[in-house]
Image 1 (tube, chains in turn orange, blue):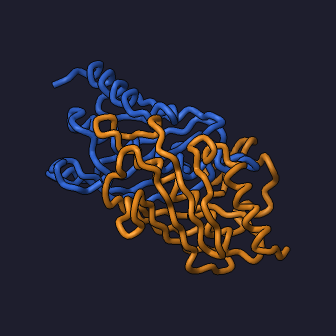
Image 2: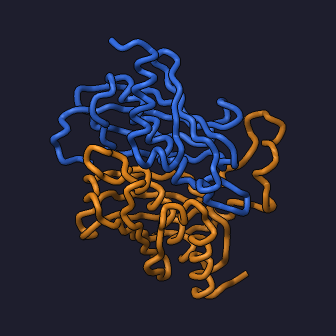
Image 3: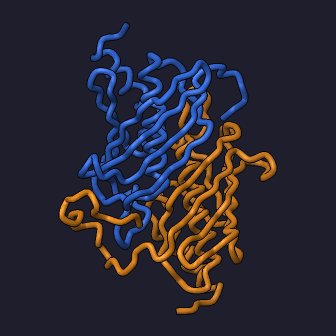
Length: 166
Length: 145
């Protein structure tokens, strides 16, 4: 199935709206171009990780980076495919400024038949002074024919091999 | 030194003080100095509603919090360690059920600690994800996040 960029953008928006966790965190899409995504997360007191400083939790930045990088991978597709994060490396440069929204820009710089390679920066004021930078690899066709609700049944046979990454 | 009960209470207080830990619903249990972090399943943790699967960012955040909590336990719960870098490997999709994690401190230097974390659901020998990270445990006045 070949789809237009507009269609892929719609899918990315649906990814945001259809992902309960992204909604719970309040991740908002700002812009989406071929292979590049920009999102933002509003500062909220319940997302603080260090109550002594009021700095937002590293885990929130992790979730924002993972989500935005997935969007960038989807935005660079010419054929729709489900994706799953294989690995994600994050360098934390400095604490985010308490009270500030955080933006995330992700760029999918290489797409093969099976893997998408993405880089991203999370920042509060200036993208050249990032809070964190990240690099990730996504597996394409992650669902690989698994039906809706596949995760609701028990892992296969309990031999420790059940449940592919998805 | 604190008794196990004191340490356990301090750990609960530490997690209850972190707004994001409350948001995720993370709690922890101690057996001696071995800590198991628990992420009870909740609908707000879902990333992929079709399978459904827990959001990868949640699993990463949970494992990072496990590392920070384990370091706090090992160091008598002084100030929170700061994350320098983490590498997350996703092995299996996170099913809609409770998730557990344990951290191993591979090296605790004067300033930097090297920590590995594994997260699992039904079977500990079939982890759903692993994290390897470096944390700043001292010299807190440095400007590393």
